[in-house]
Image 1 (cartoon, rainbow over the protein chains, first blue to last red):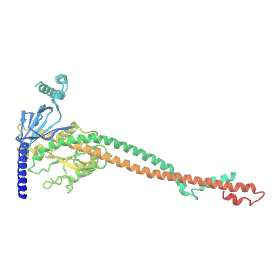
Image 2 (image 1 turned 90 degrees about the horizontal axis):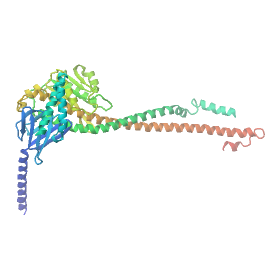
Image 3 (image 1 turned 135 degrees about the vertical axis):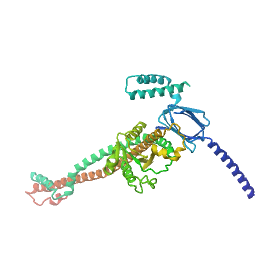
Image 4 (image 1 turned 60 degrees about the horizontal axis):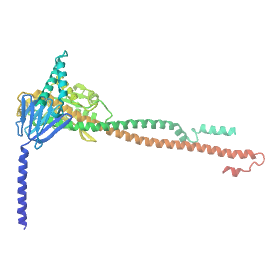
Length: 162
Length: 331
């Protein structure tokens, strides 16, 4: 009787072990993402499938087990594809995305907002304003600032148009 | 009658000298106690309202700290993976405090920690990392906040390079941190790593000075582990500067939350102490007042009994000198 129980318990243990192993393998296919702003943390070590970023060198998609790399971000769309709930898009300011050797991706950006929260109206009027200042008779620094502002609005317009 | 009245007046006037000095002194200090009571009550009102203000600010500061801390953790990840192969001795200390006092000992705790770090004492916040590379006592120091500046200028005045104020009045913003980082980079001070000395929020009633190390551009380049990272456009310089701003932001928010929490506690204690003081003063005042009243009553009764002794005797003095004496002495 006792040996029977032993066998059954051993069998149970084996089955639970194999389950655990499968679960562990699944986690390995995912990327740990931390997407943080100074005033808000959007993701903190959350498992996600893929992250598409707009890096200085061009747009790129990051999957699990990516090579460690450091990418400066330009203002653009950041897309996070989570497990079940489809993808979410944010428009981010510049910052840094870093893939670490331990399969984690940290993204520090100064400002980000969900793409659907932007108003096309406001972007258009602000873009006009920025372009006016950029071509106006302000100081060089002001003009350069307005140029950057206009670039951001343009890329934002582009992102919304897609 | 008039003579008797004069006698009682005389009695009262001479009382401080002979009859009841305790009661008379109370009469003199009663006014003083009242004044002190009034001022302590005012102080309690002030500390209490400061406590309420700090409590409401604390809730906001703690929320900001949560986000700021996560931001700092994500930022520090790259430094956790890039161990330096060559120990760096060229450190720049940045002390994170603020301009306002009345918040317990949090400013002096970062000051002390900085002094300890510069002296390489055993309990310095850098003790774990300075085993092979002791801190140079001449290391440059920059201070955010007037309070710690005033304390550090006495002991390590020669090390101070830059000081900042007007930061940390309200919740620190990223713009504050970026401004500080920009000035540090522009200051021309050479460093391999920046050591941020700040107050770490352990719990609502305890904070401890801690340090956060941010590597500079050169130190990152020299690290072999950093070379494992793919870095096509060579953004090391930008990364180093951005990381510095991020780390300053994270420590600023944490330091701010500590300050508000500490101020709340300090003001809470001050209000409690004022309450205790008001209790004892009130007791003293009441006792003094009671003593004065008793004294006056004694005077009045004495006076009355004297009057009742003498009035009948005056009445009967012509006919029966001894009549009525025993009856009137004990009314």
